[in-house]
Structures are given as C-alpha cells and as structure tokens.
Image (cartoon, rainbow, N blue to C red):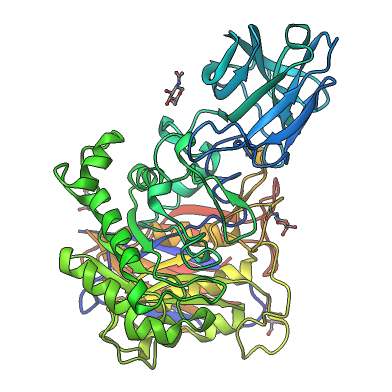
Length: 622
Ligand SMILES: *[C@@H]1O[C@H](CO)[C@@H](O)[C@H](O)[C@H]1NC(C)=O
Ligand SMILES: *[C@@H]1O[C@H](CO)[C@@H](O)[C@H](O)[C@H]1NC(C)=O
Ligand SMILES: *[C@@H]1O[C@H](CO)[C@@H](O)[C@H](O)[C@H]1NC(C)=O
Ligand SMILES: *[C@@H]1O[C@H](CO)[C@@H](O)[C@H](O)[C@H]1NC(C)=O
Ligand SMILES: CC(=O)N[C@H]1CO[C@H](CO)[C@@H](O)[C@@H]1O
C-alpha cells in the first residue's frame, strides 16, 4: 500500500496551457543520492561573524576601536603592547582622568546593534590593571535603559585575568539599538589605565552549544531538511594571497585567546570563532554530511602555489582529515580528543579548492594541483569522494580523470528555466555537485543569456526566481544518476552588512526580522521531499508545468513547478496499489515579482489532504 505526496510550487499565471494527464511509473527510475539537497556556507554578508555565530560583541579582540565607545570621561585606545596570548596581542586601553568620579567604562555596539531578551547571557572578558572593586556588566539600550546587569569582583593585578559571569535581563529590548557595557568606579582608578580584551557575550545558542549558533537563524536552517554542508568556502576559503590569509583549520581551535582570526575575503575580519569544531557540531546538530573544502594553492590575487611548494598545503589537508577522522592514537586524532572530542567524525566528501579556474588557476589546477591533492587524499582515504572545483564550468566538454565536478550557476529566471534539460547531455561518468546556484537578477535585458554581471543583483529572491530554481532542480532530479548534490548560494545575509544578494535567509540583529525568502521555501519543500529512487513520469511535455517523481519508502512523491503558465486540471495517475489519499502542498505568492522582506512575508504555503479515485488524483492550480 502506497501513500502519496504531492508538492507544487506555483507562479501564477497569465497564459493558458492544456490540462496535463501524467502517469507515474512504479519502477525504472534512478537511484537518488542521499545528500541531494544541502547548504553552501562561507563567511560572507556577516553570515558567520555577526550572523549564525551567536557572539554579540563585534571586534572582541579590539583590533581597532570599531564598535567600541567610551562611557564617562575616559579615553579609549587600541593597544598592541599587552598581548593576552600569542594569538591575541590587541586590547582596549582605558585611561581614567585624574580626579574622575562616578561610573565610567566602555560599551560595544555589536554587529549593527544587538538583541536583548529575558534569557541568560554568558559574559566573558579579560582585564588587568590596578583596580580593586567591582566591574558591572550590563545590556542597555543606546538611549540609556539598562535591561539587566551583574557584577564581578576584581583585585589589582598586573597579569591578565579572565572573568566569566552570567545574568538574565529583566526586560527585553524592543529593537536592536542596544549595546553591552562594562563599567567601574572611576575614583578607585583615577589617573590610571585599565586594559580589557576578548570581551564576549553569548545568548543561549542552538542546542545549547558553547560558542554556538544563533537560535533563530539556526532554526530556520534546521527546518529546511538539508542533507549536507559545504564549507568553509567559497572564495572565503582562499584569502587574498597564497598562504597568508587562507582559511587555516589549526588556527580555528580552542578558546578565543588561541584563535588569531584572519582577514576574510569579503572585506571584514573573521574571528574564526566559528571554527572547524563548531562546523562539525553544526553538521551533527542538523544531521548534515560535511562537504569539506580544503585550500588548494590558489590565492585570489592570482598567486598560485608552484608544484614544488604544494606539499605543505597537502599535508595541512591530510592533518585536518586525521584531526577529524583519526583514532586517538594518531597525532591529530589525539589533538581532537584533547579538545573534548574523542570520537571521530566521518568525512565522505572533500572538495579540492574553490572555483580554481579563477585568476588563471585552471592550468595549474588540472596539471598538478588537483592531481596531487586527490592522490594524497585517496591514498589514505580511498572511500572519500573527491570533488574538483574547476571543471564544473565546463561540464559538457570535459573528458575527466577527475572526481566529482562542482558546477556553479548564477542566473536569471527565463534562462535558468531554459536549462531544465542541461543535465540530460552531460558526461554520465562525472558525478556533479551543483555547489552554487541561484537566480540573482530579473528577466531584464537579453532573455536568452544568463547573468549580466554589469547589472545590479536583486535585493531579495522573487517568486519567479524561486520557481525558476525549482524548475532547474526538477531537471537535476531527473538526472539523479549524475547530479549528486545541490546547494543554493549564498545561504545567509545580515541585511545591514551584505556583500552579495540575494540570499536564502536574511536577518538583522533583531530576531523577529529573520526572513525566509521565496527561494527558502522552495529549498525546504524540495529538501524535505526526496526519495531513494526517481520514478519516470509519462504523458505530458515539460513546461510551463515541470514535474518529477520519486519513491520514498511506501510513498510516491510528485513535485511540480508551474513557471508562468496557467493550467486547467492535472490528472496524476500513481502506481497501482497506491492509496487514495494524498498530502497536497502548494507554495505561491501574489505575483511573480513578489518577495519576502523583514516582517513582511507575502508567500503562502498550504497543505491539505486530497482524495483520488482508482489511483488518479486530479489537482487544480488555484
Ligand atoms: C482528468 O480525468 C478526468 C476523469 O477521468 C477527465 O474527465 C479529464 O478530462 C482529465 N483531465 C485531463 C486534463 O486529462
Ligand atoms: C571562562 O569560560 C571559558 C569558556 O567556558 C573557559 O574556557 C574558561 O576557563 C573560563 N575562565 C574562568 C576563569 O573560569
Ligand atoms: C508507510 O511506511 C511508514 C514508515 O515505514 C509506515 O509507518 C506506514 O504505516 C506505511 N504506510 C502504509 C500505508 O503502508
Ligand atoms: C509571465 O508571462 C507573461 C506573458 O508572456 C509576461 O508578460 C510576464 O512578464 C511573465 N511574468 C513574469 C513574472 O515574468
Ligand atoms: C565590513 C563590511 O564588509 N561592510 C560592508 C557590508 O556591506 C555593505 C553593503 O554592501 C558595505 O557597504 C560595507 O562596506
């Protein structure tokens, strides 16, 4: 006995098409990869620092005075001569004028503000100087209302001392125009200086992980039902030049005092607070397969590691794999255990680099960079699926000799829809990760081409864009023998600090602004409705209604996307023995150009039960 599930995404319509009469076969399909829909994450748009990474303090190591502000008549300086650790040499020097009285100190304005809720906040900071008295820590509105505070007792010290405390504000802020403050008694330290660094404030995190994820954003991600996480980039893997600013896993471990941070590719400093262990916990907590990218010798400034200089970076990647998967009797497996993780993780997918065709990287990538990385990884980990970043730009032409191909496609709606059949003709021997795709512009300009990089990108995903993505995904599902995994990109954006739009989920520093885009709902519907096998569907042409069917246990799943066509009825005949009740989910919005924005969700998602007769279900687009 089968039950039956229908998923529809609908762009409402202006032109008429004839009704469809579809028959879903009971067999003859293709096996579907267990990781078909996933996430692509890199720190862009304050997606990590200032976003998913729940730290409220911006510039916590005080690299300069950005986000720091004096309270009372004190003078603030970014000091570089009082290192708290080898990794963190910077701190906030607070000069208290002679004769000062009352409470003085400083505040941090957060990443475009900070939310304050009646929840426990974990506070940590380092301080030193000749002060014996209380430090008051509080969360306050920028107009002066203190929502909650606590105190810690300090005694005069010439060494750094770490203070940890928690408190629960008795009142919530009505917006994000708030800050965190540390104040102390001016008279006790008048004419002297105090130093502070690594000031950290965390609200409760997703699954209560220490150093964890912001709950509202993590919940939105978790609801998608995605199956893999591609990380840590993206261009942010690479950094500006060879060696210097690439992502380095071993610098992302331990307490914040051990993480130097790095200049990220997307114009802002990365604390690396969201480090390798935090990424793995993220995977664990959302049931995601890690799809780990390792740096492959390409700098975004065009510097490329020569063949003879590549080995240290290959070793670095192998060390990372040993750190993640090795037994505790190995050097790096033991290191993992020392951080509290004796049980190994499992990594089944490794991508060598990112977009290695950029900056004239292709010839070195194909001639030695990919080969040397892949050979070294496969020699030790023969079961790891290795993904090549570069040939994805030529999926139809390449003959291969590489592993999977990571194919990226940013596009416009009509053009993306025209690619419904693109995977029908690719080399069947090269599994494909569509590691980045999204509609990023409207249908302006020549409709027969893809993105025009000279034109601006959309601020928000539109319905027509999301439906075009759905059509593209249906085309990929039909080619499940070769398309193994897909991830929309970029994933997250802070609306106040965006380098790249549109994104799947947007947010401000205030939780109720978190916005699930049109594309988000399409991803969620598709990712939550994947079976083990595709099922062939006969009886109609593809377009303007596109469709694909799958079998999941005893269920038949039919997905359809209506790309700006109208329909009368669609009859769907399901395999004999199927039940007569189906769950019918539709997603739509008022118009093709509709979009969801903070506090204004105009899309609608509805599910109802429908009954069929003799295995035929008739559905009608409203
Ligand atoms: C759907 O099935 C019904 C009942 O058999 C039939 O009357 C109708 O013409 C069919 N519609 C289409 C679009 O095939
Ligand atoms: C403060 O908390 C951090 C994080 O939990 C911990 O590593 C550190 O040892 C604590 N420090 C003190 C002085 O308790
Ligand atoms: C379908 O499978 C699910 C999960 O295995 C099971 O709970 C359910 O009873 C099955 N339904 C039918 C109609 O066989
Ligand atoms: C849908 O198609 C009509 C007719 O071709 C066209 O005028 C309209 O712009 C399309 N809608 C969108 C959102 O592209
Ligand atoms: C720090 C940083 O990268 N800021 C940028 C955030 O995004 C806005 C909008 O694109 C830019 O104007 C900022 O420079």
